[in-house]
Amino acid sequence: MPKEIFILRHGQTEFNAAGKLQGHCNSPLTELGRAQAKAYGVALQQQLRQSAGNPEQEFQLVSSPLGRAMETAALVAEV
Image (cartoon, rainbow, N blue to C red):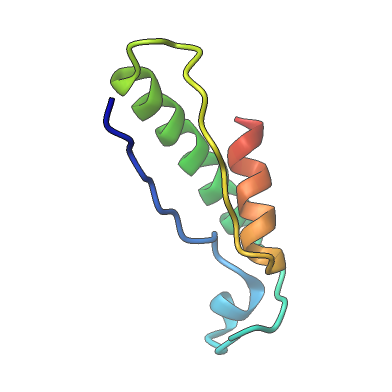
């Protein structure tokens, strides 16, 4: 069975909102960023349900070790 890969970008951070470049700096998600991450989770859940022959299909969530990416991944996983 073919595998699917979904790539998500982190939600908006405080640096993004201020127009700053962040590189490897750690900037937390804004309220909008957290809402975006949860919306990613809902969309991903719907996509997985549509494409899965088995609703209990296993998947793996992989994230960068940067705080903004891990916070986004955790919020996606909660959904």
